[in-house]
Image 1 (cartoon, rainbow over the protein chains, first blue to last red):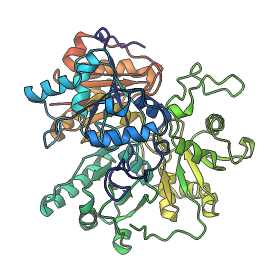
Image 2: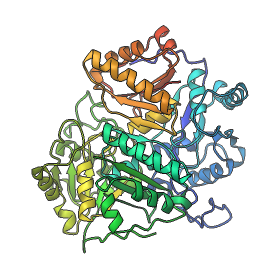
Image 3: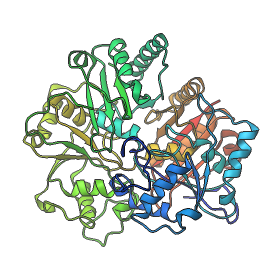
Image 4: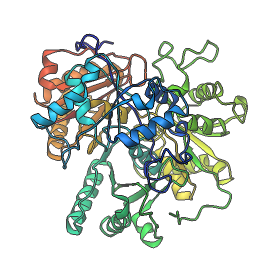
Length: 276
Length: 276
């Protein structure tokens, strides 16, 4: 097995560091305040020691948010001593991605992103981290990873929790073919049309469809799904997975109409369905 | 937040236990032989201690394979003592799923699967485990999870490595919309047509497409992708992720045609692309 692409001499690697899924869900909805006793669960509950140890060894970071990355590093330090003290960590913040998803970046964005990778080109390992889960999966960071490939910097993804894949496993729906399509339109009419389109795609391709929603719209989305999906479609909600209060439920749309489900308005939820 | 579906009195839970991704890749291509010194990496490299501890506390299992589940439990016992000795563990094996994916089970299959859940209905937690990664994701097990939901048994997915989501993160391709479509047809003509269809779907929906292949066909699939995808499509291969020798590379099809990539014929690889 070989990776024939030339690696720049002395290049460091881009490590994709997983984060927990408890962002904003523990400690009163605010990121961990370092001045208070830690109310957050032990990182080892949902992250492998391998990823925690790798994070503890880094000094250079590219992050969705610097404050929450420092909070993450404090949790890391509770388990494995940091090789570089917190106050000497070099944390650069990702530019906000353009709305509407992936597209070839403008020259300005490309330059910004290439600059973030300078420590890797200088021979240092760099960690990429988002506020929850794996960077680049339903989260910013993909443009940095692509730029690393283009520069010949090795990319090393480390295992961690992904709300999408946990929700898929917990749904009991088809896991041999599935699609994550992000958010649905907010406009009621467009949303109804999109739900019907995705139901048809699910039936035709025997493909589980997964979507997420801003938590305060969870109930509105659920009502729209119950209204527009067909009765025999299997519909699943997975709420706060990896949290102590997390749960996952799957039933037919017809049965959900008879047995209403109460969804929280402040906990991330993944919705999925499979049509027949 | 509430889960209004009635839980059977005294019901145990169905715990989805993640496995490592090193199945068949370490120790000469054979599952871990318990009579030899363990050549396998420490489970904590890629599994959270939370999942390892949960596994150590179980006695009842539904497994893709009993032998590899025992090998997994030996690795667990190296870290956390098992609450039930290995020889007293109750390991039931999943019926082979019907070819061609998810469909409403036959009555016979439904009865078989309901029987597997009897320990949960009697009040015991039951672990569901596959040979690699999360059960039910590109792997058997979804039918058991669905049966648990139908019986009102709580389902608890535990965080662990998923080759698909690691490959997606490592690809640098669009992670806000992606589809995993399983295996492509083996027949060359059908495969070419499917590749073109999936490229069009990627372009139209701005959606990363992911596929897997039986390792000995990795090179054949790669050649077919280079032949049938368009030159400006981004194409990624992620090989043996979480293994020491794992790597991930992304480039345009045009550049891959100029700089050939050597793929192993014995290591699981995830292929993905994004068309513009």
